[in-house]
Length: 273
Image 1 (spheres, rainbow, N blue to C red):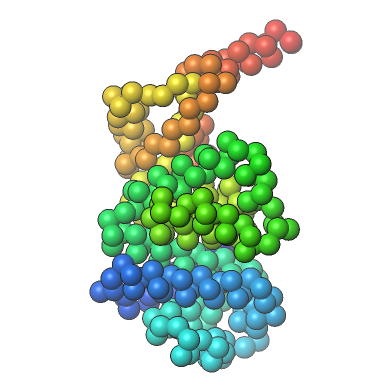
Image 2: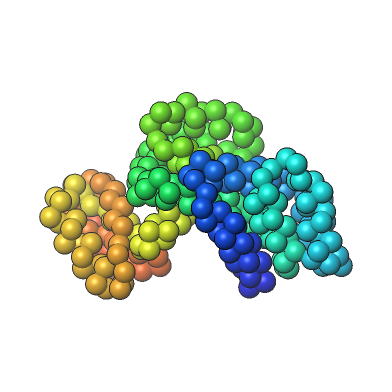
């Protein structure tokens, strides 16, 4: 959702959905999320429909009516109303509608996990799976290949995760396979980790170390970063012996690299001059 107009449309749709599902159970929210993501899949597969639903020459109510004619009787009323509100807004380009629909579905999945008290679990499961993928080149290539049938990649993910993660985690990984927000698969996973943390009002700090941190060290680092950023911080620790020692921390665009490898590389560059 790159433009201000698309963010405004998303905000109105999100507010309406939140109001209409305020008393919904986790299972009911999961159903709505699946419906919204199914519509996202339809929009991804049908560019002409995306263009029709973002056509600036048609009124917002006309676009909403078009969508409702396609969905009425097939999905819940809350889904129809939220997506009707979404398409009645303005988008700079058709792909922004797809991005907004995907985001609405993801946020609704996270709301479902929140009702279950499982947001922290989903956040950790998404990060752990992203580490598994990044650490296995064959798996990474297979899951990131946009030319491979999505159904085959979804089946592989389901086989890998079945019975091991929260249902919302599995569904979010499947969403990442389609390139959440136009990103690649691994970047989509990381973005979903950050969205999950944001639902818990936390920043994500990616920490790289040569060997595992003790619990005390993790707590100390988290406390220092929380004081620095003015909010709770969720540490995502990657143990990578190649950094030799020290700690690298990335929070958003901020990078604090105190690893031995960085210092050695800096020394090599200095000698080369």
